[in-house]
Length: 303
Image (tube, rainbow, N blue to C red; front, side):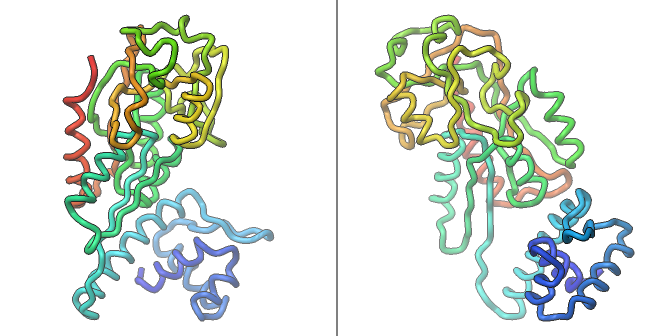
């Protein structure tokens, strides 16, 4: 296995066809095909599925390409630093469900490290994409929640993808709404009292299973339900339609503003928010600093 073979495989994985990848690499198509075939034979895995309609990654190939990218990127960092004598920015990426406090922890980490020597990326995205990003090394860390309902399904997926879930904090369920909502002055709210108001839920796209819902109580039969794709739209719907969503109760006014509040839902349901990593892969200094920042929110969990 050589770095050249890994680079060929990575390029082919991102191309629409074998001929396109060959042109990008400035080699002949037969040479590319032979090199990839030799790599597959050496590792004993079929990386690409070849059909009359083109070429695509196998599930095993997706995992391999994730590792290959990490190896090639690390080599290029060493090459730039020790051979070309260049200053190369270190990279850190995190994917998460829509948690303001997780974004705020990212902000605090970036402020401390600065952006001159580092390249950062943050992705607020769908639950399944959080898992896929960590699996495929697109993000070092993923932030999501588990509870009694989705735990078995998600933990099986974590196991199959060679991932580990680590608890950060456990909390009760809160109703998140704007301060002008008719129920905003309550100490506690029941689901029955919320029936006439639209429940706001983050759309999960093609993986729209109850188990991937970002909001707990996903199987509850809501009378009115609206799905949205981003947090800004969610906040607008809270004001415009007196909508609400279910959350951890941790509020970051610096990012969302002071017009919103969290009120405890009358329910015994609990959620555990944690972070996802690749099994056996050490967390970087940037990753550890991010986890330090996010751990500070344990003290802000509402009772």
